[in-house]
Amino acid sequence: MSALPLSPPLIGVTTSEMRLAEKVELTPQGDPPDREMALGMTYLRAIERADALPVVMPPLDIAAVQPLLDRLSGVCLSGGPDLDPVSYGGRQHPELGPTERDLDEFELAIAAGADARGIPILAICRGEQALNVARGGTLLQHLPERHGSIAHRQSEPGDRPTHAVAVDPESLLARILGRTQIDVNSFHHQAVDRLGDGLRAVAWAPDGVVEGIEALDRDFVVGVQWHAEGIIAFPEQSALFSGFIAAAQRYDAARAEEQAA
Image (tube, rainbow, N blue to C red; front, side, top):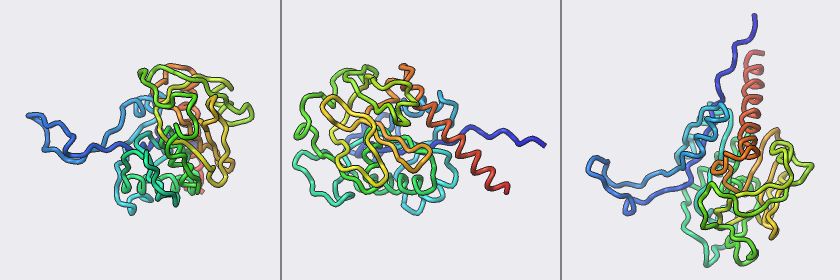
């Protein structure tokens, strides 16, 4: 008897933006103001376009991490605010932006848990930074202090690339993108400094900022500093999501085979 076809992979997407109650605009038909999650729909549409099912993960209690991962085929670590340097033993820079410690704790636990299980991870912008920290790396807290020749927080719309990125031709990222030179958008204040364990830098902006990282010991653990979901109309960015979902399908197939054994 032939095996049943696998369902579309279920991809958990972290929610890294929070809106405080005092900044929530009350509408006549809406709920009372409260602390809210915020996540751009572009992440979810990009994952759906790649033939997977996205599900949003709010910052829950750490006890929820493993039960969540039991159900997921892949994890997308989304963009958002600065990470608090306490998560990697650093001191706060005077220019550090607003941080959310409970959000950091949950997202880092999700990243570490998924990584330990071999669940495919696509980490975007802040997500790349969280992935690096989850593997023991550190961050540059205020990019203009170290890198000033590129505007890493562009004023142009998010669907418009504004600077080039060089990609290591020997990397998984280059194979997926099908290119070693690409143009990307840029909306970040922090970036990778010391690489985490088992990670390597595979893409760079012209000013030397690390724009891509990947794990040497996993099928698909890839981080990009740009917002690939915002420029999904470009074939190489669409290919990044397709490669991620293909890895999630492989993970599901291996899990089903293991359960059937």
